[in-house]
Amino acid sequence: MSSHASNRARVIPLRPVPATPGPAPAKEPLWRDVVGDVLRRERLAQERTLKDVSEAARISVPYLSEIERGRKEASSEVLAAAARSLGLGLGDVLSLAQGELARRSQAAPVRASMGEVRLAA
Image (cartoon, rainbow, N blue to C red):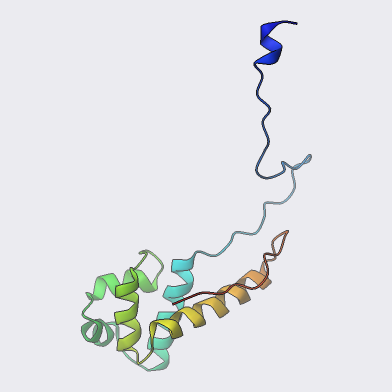
């Protein structure tokens, strides 16, 4: 028995590699995009400006704009301040974002379902 045969490692892929190339799987939405959409939708529903909400939340207008556009991943403190400035709690924003994420995931199904998503705030 040669020493080369006993030194081989067996590679176990984390995800099965498809035998034939097919269409690319649907892209999962990013959390920051979903949260940003929720904040913007709530702000617009209240007919408030970025300036008004940013002043109430003590967040700069450019930073709040980037959060709403999904360009920045806001901390929980910043999200809570933005939520409060809209008359919501952090849990409200996270709940709305979870519902939106579930809707988007149903629109673009993935191969295996992980079940219900629950978020703790």
